[in-house]
Image 1 (cartoon, rainbow, N blue to C red):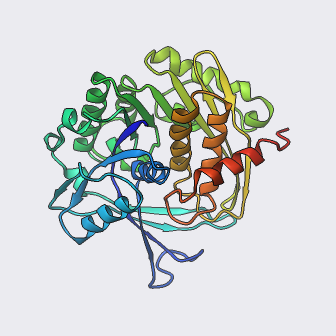
Image 2 (cartoon, helix red, strand yellow):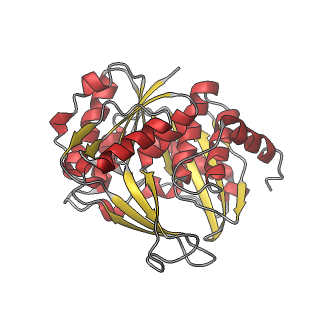
Length: 341
């Protein structure tokens, strides 16, 4: 069994009930969320060995986060508890032509203020095989960026597989560096890269482009995008590209591509209507991708399972992928037989 470690921020998510606007009523639904934490929970629910590393406030909020992660099978023992605050984010669900809305309140959170020396990466990663990070964590603050690069560099030196989900949050980059420079530096340590088609341009400055209907009509158009990454970073061995087409806030379609230097596989296209909650869909895809990659290797079955995991999440409230392997596999098997024209 692969032993995973992940670094990132976990926040308290405050959502307006149903399809109401933020503060339309005095009630907000409280759950926990965060990109790497979402992946950790998903893998923990698949009974994988996963350690989530972060900094949390030394109070009841930090204790609540710790207990929530433990409930899903995630090891939280390597987390730093310190004085400070828990990041928040507010959500209202979109409907029809009104998009989903997210408001962050995460400035000066514990992970944003943590001293990079608080993490002894050689010790924290000593019993791990795989390190996962997203492009959100280095955006939080300069110290979080230093923690990210230190962790990735150490993981690479120790022989761990390093995966990264680009996951750009442009509004978070507020401390005077260009995000593209940081992302390019991160790529030097990456073995397995995940991102949506837009992120390869906005995060890495790639020139390859795809058209709106290429996933339907010309999926080979994604090959130059993967080849450009492989040419720039010889250390990267596998790339997963996610694709989303939006009709409205509650009607979208998703698909994904898995590429190595020599081959490419394309998932089914999942038509998703009456979306319940799309937040965390990308993290659910990454969860399914990492799990299936470890279980099945680089093959069609892996990208089908990952695509189904991402699609399944759209039916589940909250950020976490609360679905079993069997449920996701059933969706993957059923969707694979659909007409893809």
